[in-house]
Image (cartoon, rainbow, N blue to C red; front, side, top):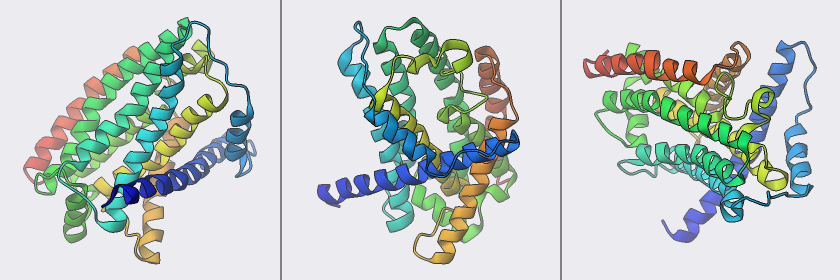
Amino acid sequence: MTIAYIIACIVGSFFFLSVTGMLAMWVDRKVTARLQFRVGPPWYQNFADFVKLSGKEMLIPAKANIFVFAFAPVIAVLAATVAGTVILLVMRTGFSYPGDIILIVYLLTVPSLAVILGGSASGNVLAAVGISREIKLLLGYELPFVCALIVPALKSGSTTSLLEIIRYQQANGAVIGSLSGIIGFVIALFALQGKIGFVPFDLAEAEGEIASGAFVEYSGILLGLFKLTKAILLIVGPLFLVALYFGGISLNSPAGIVAGILKYLVILVLIILIKNTNPRLRIDQALRFFWGWLTLLGLAAILLALIGR
């Protein structure tokens, strides 16, 4: 692949992930509204909100590190987009290499690091509380998330290639059909909830407690980019789980695309249900949950995968 082709793929993926991510956020808002006996916004509301934010004045605190403050949301969007590009290339063209799962894991960590850097560069006290929580959450959910990724890797012949994991499932059945696969999927789903920053793990933002926390000083297009990152992650994260546990998506046929959309919607609905049926946890509760139950279950799932269950 040439550099020009890779750049074209990233740009195309950015527009695709941005549009579908905004629509996924609309589904989240619409379902949430219905559960609360409200009508909910129209389908174009998230697009209008982003355009409105883009047109607003971008305020930068006087004591902020301007470069880090402004560059953090750009890095967050870029990392989420590249992660999505890798996953889409694997599903669409079969382009893969040993270790691409490790690359995706690192890229999915960058948005959280960007929130930490951006919040710390603002110099705001409330932002400092938010980034403190974000750091603890990052340390909390990464361990069980990695455990959940090891399960399909082991069951597919101890590989770190996403394409090999998908091919194994196409030949032998989806990983979710095994006991270790079910446990691993549940763990990955909760860890993904933390990565996206949805309830009950929206501690870094927590508008009712710390006035948006790490984002308190952000406005205009920079705030819009952070919100766009969350929308993109709402596509990339579930797609990653679809590839790891449901055998991926065949983008070469209409039937495969429809089946893939249904797989994605199953995960999206589960994320929305978790968000709307749980209260926000305290940071100590979240850490006990990730380092306690989820990590223990993750280790159990790895042992079950090793013995073929």
